[in-house]
Length: 104
Image (tube, rainbow, N blue to C red; front, side, top):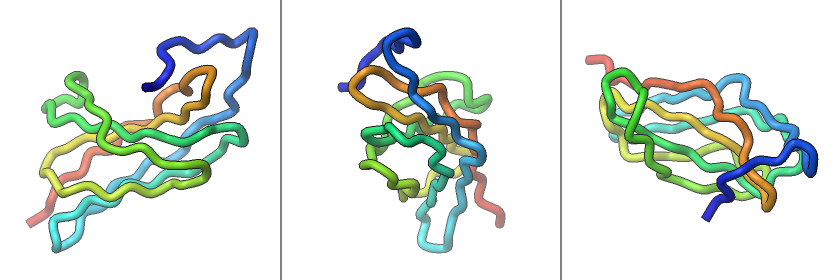
């Protein structure tokens, strides 16, 4: 389970995601990638929502290890994704939100 609080005075999590991206392929898979700008994460987690405005009902769909910046998900048309880093002290801010829409 991820820590719920982040304490700046005890620990600085140097992390930000510049460009979370999602792409869908013909086999109904979505690949989510991001840039790792942190040097002290224990891993990342990726969340997905199917809400139309990408504002609520976020759920964690994957955890990665240190320096891993790719997650594959079963494609869901209109899904929105975001990611964050974590360590034993807390979690980072979320990345930008990427919406993946299948073009026909």
